[in-house]
Image (tube, rainbow, N blue to C red; front, side, top):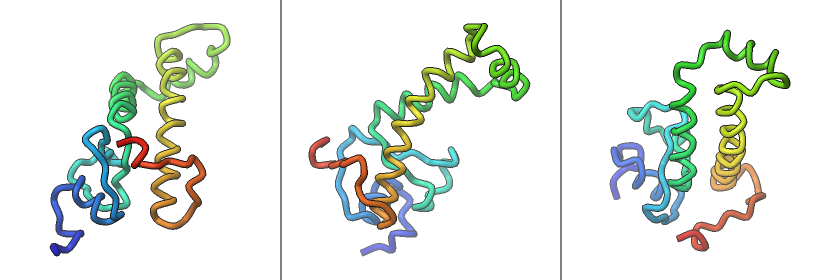
Length: 123
């Protein structure tokens, strides 16, 4: 078998490293957003729909400037701004992604499967 670290196909790399199977309903997310960094520690399994939502909101915030954050936080109660709405919608997506980070920690042996994620139920 080819050395896992030499695999260029990061989906196959993830499957072989963790000894799991998953369908095309799942994406492999590059945590640092660098698609050239296929280190197993940079790869995260996410349901495709969640992965798409994550990148949708992230793309809406790409022009977000830090000074806007201060404006938002200081006026968050009084104003219903464009960025406030995006952030409010993005937070549940981030929380859902966190469950999949915990699942990766489970696969790595650091946590129990606290969210009871079972890929065979999701295939």
